[in-house]
Amino acid sequence: MIVRPEATPAAALGPLINTLVGPRPIAWVSTVASDGTPNLAPFSYFNVAAISPTPILMVSQSLRGGSEKDTLTNVRATGELTICVVTEEVADVANATSGDWPAGIDEWDVVGVTPVPSEHVRPPRVGESPAAFECQLLEIVELGTPEQPSNSLILARVVAIHVDDALVGADGRVDASRVHLVGRMGGEDWVRTRDRFPMGRPGGADPDDVRARFNTR
Ligand SMILES: Cc1cc2nc3c(=O)[nH]c(=O)nc-3n(C[C@H](O)[C@H](O)[C@H](O)COP(=O)(O)O)c2cc1C
Image (cartoon, rainbow, N blue to C red):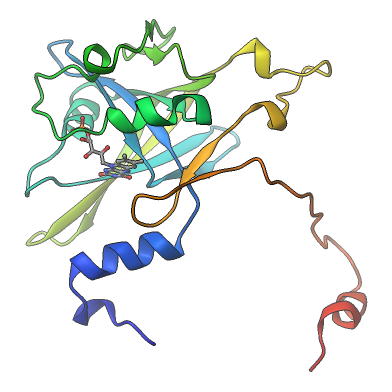
């Protein structure tokens, strides 16, 4: 089949694209409102945008019933966010912080996770998450059209990275096998990431060698 976005309702396009683009990592985003009210929510429209000289992460937030959600409002107001990683150990509690609740509701209090003060920004990190990025807002890119806004893409500069020492191996590096990251697939499906396999890139390999291995045309 072929799907033409302009002729397809969002209610069908979303599930299709979310099924085909995955697994998506999960950002557990902590922000504070200008009056200090804390907020916490998970996002799967999340990824790395740059590493050097400055690491940049990106998170995309959609509207809810035509209105901006709390995370975006808070990031616009304060320019700060803390992004915690979501592992198997915290997947269900991270999911629970996605409730459609009014701005006054403090998700930290609802689910009972532990706020640990950040060093450079006001939003705390979740003590139960084994790693977190303290971030400052770089830019917000508005997506959609003026008549029909859709998402706001938050580009965030990483100013500090916290890693639980339990994840660090004897060589001083983070041991990937200890970080039990989860991801989001289509619908309500999530995925574990323990089934890993290494694969080197071709780098400067002779294209004829690559052709001999793969190309049967
Ligand atoms: C696993 C998961 C991933 C989500 N990803 C996104 C996302 O990428 N963008 C988005 O706008 N909402 C996403 N949501 C929904 C938000 O978490 C939800 O709307 C939340 O209430 C927003 O909170 P806020 O109003 O406190 O910002 C996701 C929900 C879950 C459970």
